[in-house]
Length: 76
Ligand SMILES: [Zn+2]
Image 1: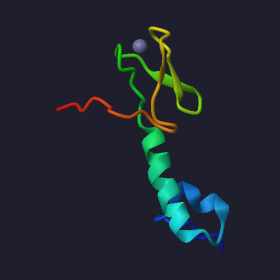
Image 2 (image 1 turned 90 degrees about the vertical axis):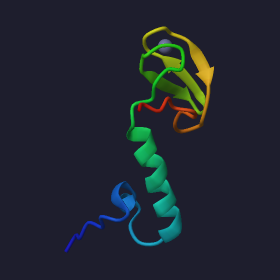
Image 3 (image 1 turned 135 degrees about the vertical axis):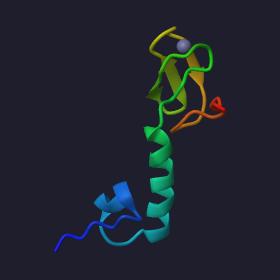
Image 4 (image 1 turned 90 degrees about the horizontal axis):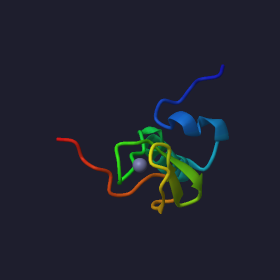
């Protein structure tokens, strides 16, 4: 009976309803799963609180996007 909807992915936990919002949420959560890279070094940044990030490697704190880092270095 429990059919998983591939389109809404991780937002499936909210059950029926909230269609459009769930799709937006999925887009955000996909970005969250990508490695968040420190802009000062190559370390991994951890979100401390909303918009405040701390690098695990160099320990620097910086403000960026609330749920994922802005201006990620694009690797060519
Ligand atoms: Zn760093």
